[in-house]
Length: 388
Image (tube, rainbow, N blue to C red; front, side, top):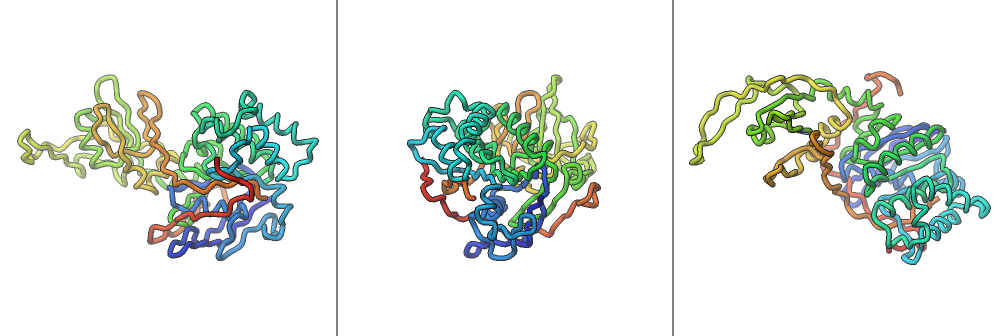
């Protein structure tokens, strides 16, 4: 069982959303990482058969997916960023409707619907109209729809959007169990969703696939580029201006532990701070020694922020309300995870019912595109699927 993506490309006017992407998916959970506009959604729509590539081919077990027709729909499950439904649909109505479109036998539909309602904690709301559900519950209904036919190939675009932390953990565990003998591809920029469960990860940037490998292989790309130290709290604004800080924690003694990305440790020799006097005149200050500056064990989040520095530069607020430029999804380790709002563009509603090696050397790093690409264009909507 494998899905072969062979040099596929897709352009919209002057935008090349997907640029000669090749990879082979085998059973297990695959993470597809990238910033918004990287081309992830366009790639998924082509895998789903909703959109045709301008160049290249997608094959399932050696056969072009376009030739499989109904057979491909039977083994395929898809959760788009937003799914369409009739406004009068209850959860039960929608899942039964989706089961009919997927060709599930009537005798199996009730059993499978009840299993998924229980599995996704939707049993208490199955008679409610979908339009009256919270965002997290609507997302779980979409997940149930994608799992109805127990697909061999499951594609999910931002599946944990709107889920609370507990629901995200349960969902990850569910996928890990489900993917034992199936191919599951998850597109996300919430790195923790795939860091521990993904068999392999692929990273897209500007429409190109720039890296692929296991989590352990990929994090070696930032080995020696992640550092941590403890600094005086009053110096934090200066370090934030000069360093790519991705995590910080307030210590009991009033100091701040920081984790930052850099080619080298920012010691007194290569990081000299200046300060201004009360009248605003610039005055030289002594070199600030970075105490206990030491390398940190890299994580997948570090690689993401290293490859996408624009995400690491989004504003966060400190306790006093002053603007800070910090890493996306930065953790304040003294408290709870502080995750920046997702900046996903709205997509047209759709039903979504259509039907290498084990060492660091195996990591394949591709050339990066030289311009900002990745516009995800409008796409075909399943007949009858209306947004509520």
